[in-house]
Image (cartoon, rainbow, N blue to C red; front, side, top):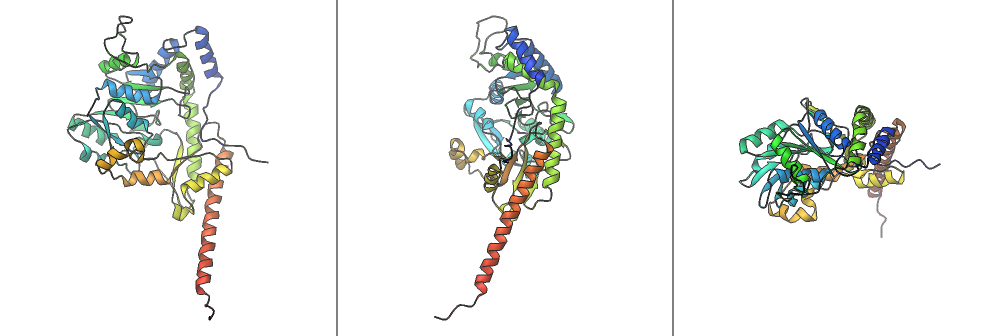
Length: 397
């Protein structure tokens, strides 16, 4: 019997989310106002240790909203990692500014604080540290640099909801925090996002921009040009259910990540990122590096063979400075990011979602172990064959 297919991700939705969404529909408040939206923003702000939270239509619009509210514009520069989803850099370009790519720390896979200062110029307005794959960036030295140079810091916490840095919640550490509630995220509404901050005037500015720039005190009066980046009440209803269940969701995801780490710890050529001593990662997608020499095959070959066994996976993000929209500007800056390039070439993301059973995790890990052994065995056999052939005496002509 063919084993069941294991997707890389699956939203964990219960009867509670269904009931709340139905209540939102029954209320007829299905657009960008309603009781669930107010409730979600209040609960998420408190849970994120911030004074304010605003729901948005996606994590990408959350980023753009934050940057626009901070006044980012034409000719400005923002320091970002190249190892992240492309939305981080795109949001900078939406404002007419230019992302300046900096390498990552090989231990955390997040923005390397020691590489930032050399990239700061008179055009630099801010820094966007990404809490990649749930692990917090080393924020304290980044904030110190920001204060020294008069820069703002926007945390991209799309993959790090409720992660902690030195006991403090990600998204509350910089000027603004941004989050994603896409279908594969820790909390989800299918699509959705949020911005968090504790600066009241900045929150008001983001709220104004989010709602087409309409004056909240005077309907259909638009003092500025804004965007339609609002979250719907239906999406907020789903998120209210997710918020009630977040402890169970996070606990199960953490258990899955621990099981992966235990099972793959002794597999040759598989490198697992450990949490820094000051970090409490959010359990997004379990990820590791595949060394083709010691594992036996390349990351992409492993992914192909896992797929043949009914197991989905994702390669690590292609470094943004290698992508067509950013390649030319990166070349002009002579961008060299060896740690980023290595992670992009070797990294793989494995299935992670609360409904994934321990047996399925063991099946995935067993498959990885078997695939590596098979490739190493074939390599040894080929080397032995070449050695034997080289050792045979040649026949006289």
